Length: 270
Image (cartoon, rainbow, N blue to C red):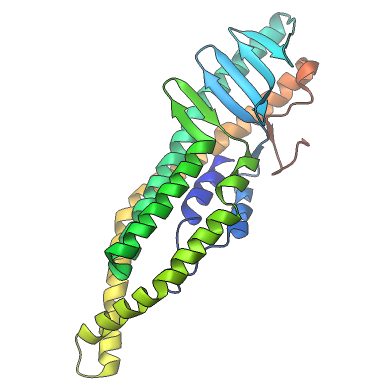
């Protein structure tokens, strides 16, 4: 499930190097199918407390090993208690990993964008790119963050806010306003390129661009592979969590209507 978040975090901010066209936000959302799992509710993890909520309304919480559903304490037998404690432990250990993964992906994406676009678009436009990336980071922080020993992860639906029409428009405006600068930069680079003929200059310029791209890829590749590996681990852990939760919801009927993890995006069906 969270490998999809990494894909979103990275893909939403990267431009095509050849066309510099913004990635469509709806296309980004389609990347959620990687792990085939979705988070149906917001989750807050604190020491000795796990809160599952929707739009700020608590659905259930597990506090000091006690289960409350809709504010009412649920009496548990020994087997149910063991399942609740195991579930709490698993969720509490996995949520921080997901948050760290998402934030690291955004940092890497910001670095890649800055490295690839600033040399072509100049410092002024580069500053606008940095501002856009900061805006994206703020949006990501709103749905995946840590404050001290409290961790918060928003539901899959919260990504609709991160990559909404406003953000897509911001990206499009940046590209449109940068086209003139980009063409001037390309023209200057082309004219100053080595070669006695126009074709030779084009070839030299193309080779230079490929070298820049290769350098960026080389610098980013190790980080990208590390993030992908972490994403695979997190995804597998969430698959195991989904199985544990299914068992819990059978043993504790009060939780039947609150599936935290489900197999299809934007659904609460098992």
